[in-house]
Amino acid sequence: MMVVEIEGLRRGLIVLDTLLEHGPLNLTELGEYTSLPLATVMRILETLRTAGHVRRGVGKHLWRATTIKSTESWSNLAFAVSEVSAAPIMELCRRIPWPADVGVYENLNIQIVETSRLASPLLSRSPTTQTVSVIPSAIGTAILSFTTDEHRSQILQDLESEILDHDDYKLHLLAVIKRTRARGYAEPLYGLPEGRYKDYMYNSIAMPIMHKEKAFGAISVSWIAGVATPNKFYKAHICELKETIEKVENNLFELLKKKKKIEV
Image (cartoon, rainbow, N blue to C red; front, side, top):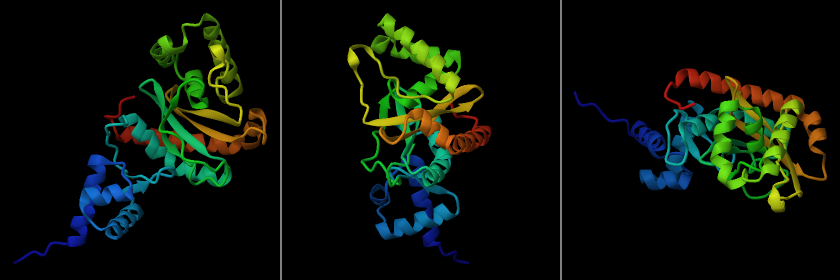
């Protein structure tokens, strides 16, 4: 008996395997890798999405398989945080229309792994860069402030040659960390020697993504400076921010239970 191949299934598996091997990818890149027409790729992606096998990032519209797999540019941890934060970030964007970014510390910088900038109707501009400096970013300040002493020491040791050779700034940094922990959210850490990194056109605050007392990353929200002070913005949106953080942390906890090989 001759068995007939299911062509649609074969093409779907090609797309899925390509995302597992090379993702995240945009639609054009998928077409190039698979040599399939873009209309066909789009139909396959939508089928896989509704079945829960792939998802499209909120910010850069990159498609990725929902199975965790490290890539050349992202660690397993960065990929994991991206996976678990995409849906909560989109929901947050519907409740707080200002753009939000999700970042993790990696290779001396903050790696932006998800963003709602293209979905946000406010503060319209190009998507944020893929990496930002640990200092003065609000995400970097949040991770430094809320993570374990061991993790903080590791990050500061990494950054020592860049910023911590100024004794006055070391004291300033410690004071900011103490103040940040007390109020529950981080702001950009301005005040570096020689007045570097000062940009007051926009405000932002960030809250950490925690797992077993370690800050795996942080979520920041940015807005035009004249709209509200950081403290007023935080008080106005504390419920939405905490609910989003809780969803991301719960998703991360469940994912880490299933994926034992993710480096933490």
